[in-house]
Image (cartoon, rainbow, N blue to C red; front, side, top):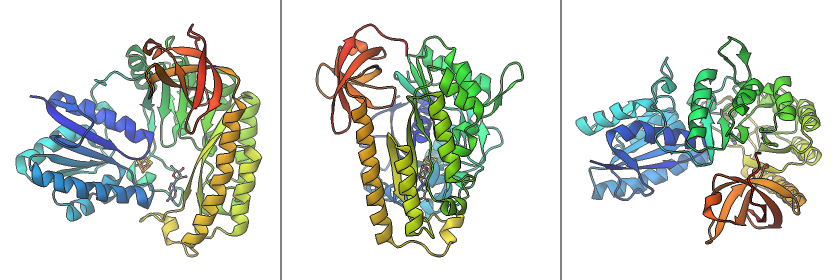
Length: 446
Ligand code: 5AD
Ligand code: SF4
C-alpha cells in the first residue's frame, strides 16, 4: 500500500540533496513523496542549524505538526538534518510526540528507525557518525533528476571556523571515491541531467584516487566529469579560499563546461576578524585568488558569504569588509548577522556586538551588494547567452532556465525546450529574473 511522505527541507543545497536521498531510501517501503504535510503518513523535517533563526523555525514547525498529529495520531514525525544532530535529545524532551530523530550521516537507517518507532510507539534516535558512510548503503536514486541536478561529492569540515556549527553537525571532512562520483554522475546524466552542481561543505577540499591510483583534487575531478558527453555544465559549491589550488584555477581557464560563476565565501575583509574566525587566510590572499581566477577566466562572476558583527568587529573592521566588496565587485552574495551558536568558540568571546550595530552594518553591506548584483545583471543585457531550460514558467508558454552566471531567465518557448540549452537574448531585468527572447532554437552545447 502506498504511504504518503512529506519532506520539508531547510538550509543549504546539501539538505536538498539529502532530502531526495531520504525519499530514495524510503521508496522500497512504499512511501511516495507528496507536497503537503496534511494527510501524510510520515513527515520529515530536514533541518538547518547554521544560525539561531534556522533552528527556531524547526521548533515552530514542530508546534504546528503537534496539532496535526492530535487529529491524525498515526502520523509519524521525523526530525533529520543538522538541528537533529546538534539537539536530538533536546528535541525529544521538548517535543515528545516526535517519533524519529536522525542525523545527516545516519539517514540511510531511516527504514529501520521508522519501523522501530511505529512498532514500539517510542522515539528512535540515531545521531551517530558511522564508520562506513551512508553512501555505501543508499540505493540508486529512484526519482529522475531535472535538467540541473545536485551531486554530493564531499561532506563535513575540518577547518573549524570559530563561528560555525558544521564541523559538529556534519562531522569530519570526507570525500567520496572518484569511481563512485563518476558512476552517480553518469546515472544522473542518463536520467536527463544536463548540469551538475557538485556539493560539499568544503567542496574544493575534495580529494580522491582515480582508477589508475592518481590523486585527484576538485580541478581533476571536474575535468573527468566534463568528459561525459551529454553533460553540458558543471558547477560546484561551497568552496573555501584556502583550498583554491592551481589545478582548480587552471580548470576554470581550460574547461568550458565549468560555468563562469563561483561562490567563494570570504566572510570579512578585515585581517583581524579573519584571524579571529580562524579562516586561515587574510584579505590579500582572497584578492589574489580572485585576480588569478579572473585572469584564467575573464568572464568569471563571483558571489560570496559575509558575516557582520562577529565578536570584536570594530567600525574599522567593518569598513575593511566594505572596501573588499568595492574592490572585488560581486555578482551575488549572502550576508548575515553573526549568530552565536552553542558549542562554537566564538560564542564564548567577549565583546559581542550589539544587535543594533549588527543591524546597521547589515543594511549598509546589503545595499552595496544589492547595487553590485543589479549592476552585474544589467551588464549582461543585450547579450545572447546559452540558457539551460529547467522548468515551465509561471505564465503559459513560458519556460525558465539559467544563464551561465546562474541568473534565472524566463523566455517564451515550448515546454519541449526543457532540458535543452538554447541561445537567448537577455532583454529586461525583472525583480528576481531576467526576461529573454529566443535567439536560436538550435541547442548549443554549453
Ligand atoms: N552566524 C552567522 N552566519 C553564519 N554562517 C555560518 N555560521 C554563521 C553564524 N554563526 C554563514 C557563513 C557561511 C554561510 C553558510 O552561513 O557566511 O558561509
Ligand atoms: Fe545548515 Fe550547514 Fe547543515 Fe547545511 S550543513 S543544513 S547550512 S547547518
